[in-house]
Length: 317
Image 1 (cartoon, rainbow, N blue to C red):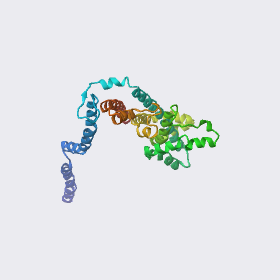
Image 2: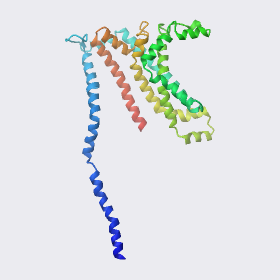
Image 3: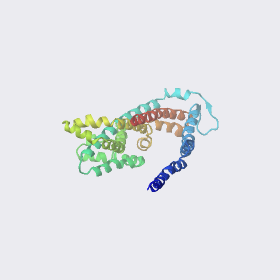
Image 4: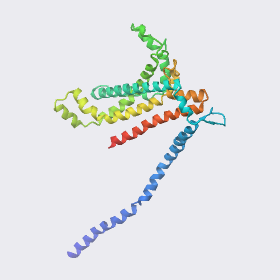
């Protein structure tokens, strides 16, 4: 019996002694793991640095010259292009319009997106259909939206025809050709198209709210309004901040909708920064001044990009 027990102990102990050797053979040295990770990210780093960063540096250099974009010679002017912006009425109008446009779409998109998300979460019937209908405009091309909007909002378009049909013909007007309504009309088009994006973010964030917390609030006697303001709304703080940053960056990049609907007019009522850069660089052959304008746009976008990265770290913490 002692011999048998010793043999059994030896057989059961042998695999245990063999495991560390096998585990050691499958373990990579730390420096090899880091090298492999760098190889995976190297193509992305080369692409970003070679296309984006080098392009920005080249654009900054062009912004300090007077150049038409075609001639092989460039006249260095230092920061004269940036000084000229202070006297450029079109630039100042574009800066003002972009700021008003950005603030308006931030407020409206976030408010409507949050309202629709709450509606979907409280609605028992048709919620899946509502999700689809709200998100469909987001996937449409801005060129399609702009072309359709021009026909609908024209003086003889469908909107004015509908107003006439319901007895509100006095409100009919060329919505995109009126200086007092053109910018507000662009805001309405943008909000209609991209509210679905805010809705999806809020809908996912509300789904992450702890149900136990909601049940506890109901037990304490909190109504729907109190539950929304005290429980749901504070939990959406990270979503608010991220959507504000992303919407602001999208406002800075707005170009195709404006050029396909109003072209910056009437007058300068819908002039945007991106459109002014295009006009100076492509239409008027002021490549140096256009590069300086685009650098201002890059700096503003960079501020929002840094803010977005900081906010993402805050959310993770």
